[in-house]
Length: 268
Image 1 (cartoon, rainbow, N blue to C red):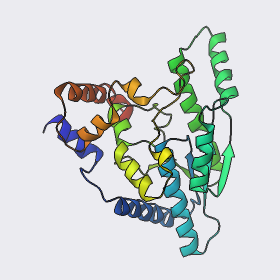
Image 2: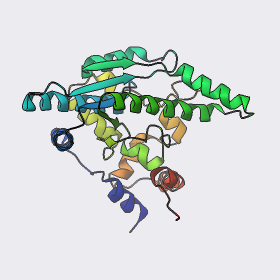
Image 3: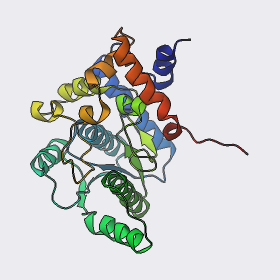
Image 4: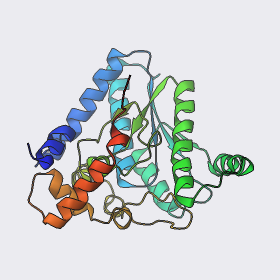
């Protein structure tokens, strides 16, 4: 089996989707999970202001709204977390996302002091971290906060990683990839846009340029610049379409070099 077909099968990305069905299926499966695990009463999502967390948060809130109505239990809730590092440059967008999702609860925790404290502790031990490593510290601090809230609220952490990020390893190990459930892992970027459009998300939000925004020295750097390839090309690869050999080599190299991020290796 060619590597492209193997990757597509592994990630489960469809060549074509019907947004309405994809939305309904995810809501149904999440409801079934909650009904089976009755001790879980809240869903936790970190809202960054980007497409992925916007879609994930909206799907979670719709799920909670439906299950409260159907089960007549007000204990179920969706909690959106805002976890900026200092002042976030696209904070206005984040507020618009919150307006779109309409979460039951919103907590804002600024992670800057925690990250800076960790950096200083390492420096005292003679360890100086790069701006890139510090970016990973931010992602892991955000996940730590999510699990603290989750433990308090009898919840689970819902991830926001899409198939285009997963295939390229464009996530922080034990950071934004350290989750309980992922609703969008089988969707590529343009499919996520289609679902958001179907959910009547404002166009400027679902057409927003994706950025991890983790490095201090490269604020709001587009993901595509960091990856060295456009999401549109990655999406086509994941849909089984033919792309340039040079682009295919870039994607497959990123995939092979990041296998350790997707799989735990057990040698014993």
